[in-house]
Image (cartoon, rainbow, N blue to C red):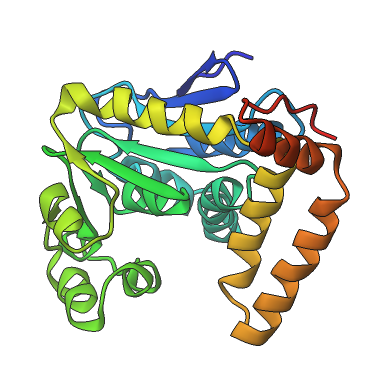
Length: 258
């Protein structure tokens, strides 16, 4: 499919979604609608086992396209509600994608750009990247729910009240991202990780993604039971039996997605 604000490539069982709205990947309604469409499509694509979200520009995403706001006001009753719904859905489409998603953050991820990053399952950044929630600098306030899920109370609120930037090296020091790498090493690292994930049993991967999403908001007891039920279901699949045979026979398993 052809998109205006995205480019999509395939490398084996890995899909790479590039944000591509120069110069800074400001998120407008078109980009958000395309994000929803492409990530929803992966849910029904058995050839995709892992997804990478990256950028074709030097900025991962500078956040929302502020130039859209005057036009929203002119669209009449309900316009802001529809706008906000699309903002939410573009992030939720990534979170709820039934395939693991890796963020390859090659530059600044600001506001809604940081939101896209944190919607992914695994975060990797180049060492020239940074994150911030700069809404306070344009007279707005948004992102505290996101910040307080990622950072501790003091750092989250300092970022929210000041628009403070946090570098990739600092994110790595805090244990929040997998690596802070020279820019030329980012995509090779991410693609190696994506290919490793894509080599696993596809049914188990989908269940693993579901378990990660669902148990994050469950009490520990119920979460443990949910995962045990998943293990029982997986034990009945052909792929699980193949994985166990391959382990005993010291060979690479051949999965059929059954």
